[in-house]
Length: 148
Length: 148
DNA sequence: GGGTAATAGTTGTTTTTGTAACTATCAAAG
DNA sequence: CTTTGATAGTTACAAAAACAACTATTACCC
Image 1 (cartoon, rainbow over the protein chains, first blue to last red):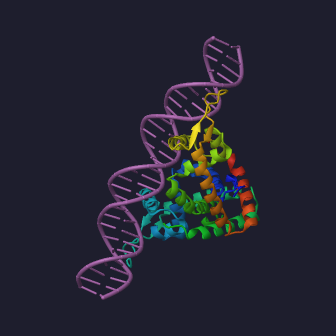
Image 2: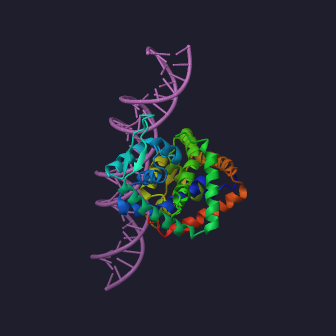
């Protein structure tokens, strides 16, 4: 504690890295498609896991349900996704991409993949893999403290 | 690219980890002192590096200058920090903690240190150290793309 | 079944944030 | 000096966020 250093405080360092790492990428999809971050996340969750409900996205990504709700509305207006009906539980709305949503998703996924490659150059493939594992361990430990 | 996985996309994973890791800690200082995250960051920067100007905090923490400006106003109203004058450059305001700010800082630093210890349990000391290094490397690579 | 609690999702209201424009001061060049 | 451009910090306004309250549906249980 005597030698506590802000720069080595994990939540602080993690935030800095996350913020810096996402900034350039965020600008690129914002410029190209005018997407916000929650919209990007919802799009990717639906693209990768769809059909998926808002609540499932929330549990998977820790995104708050109001953010998801509004992002879904926007993406729907754009005709990038549609809400289906779940006859077994009429509260749920399984979400799926439309063909044009799929097209945008594919393009954005390519952008993400390229950006990830560029980032990984900084540390190398093997360290990138162990980084992912380490981050998951931290998330797991923190999860007990989540709460929506 | 064919096997691009959202869960392994570094900016996404980093954000999840940062968000989860900071949430519990954020709640604890919010409950105890009613601090926002920018206020916490400014307090820690001034506590650790003061006297320091808003601009120097911005460069160090990538916090936007308007956030810093507002956080400084709040912390000043609380009498936790004061603005000094820089006679050599009257635009700058070197910031310093007051005695009561120092007291709060010491308490919060203890909380942060304890929380960090708890988090590090998830991965072990040595991995925590290499994690910090890896994160810095990612930040360095991303920095070229920063822009305030 | 009928009542109570829980869940999925939305909407309204208040804070916080991002962006740009602004003031004040300093630096550089002629 | 004085003009031009840069920098530190603040403020105004619009966009996005948090938070709480709400509707509709389902689950539980007596």
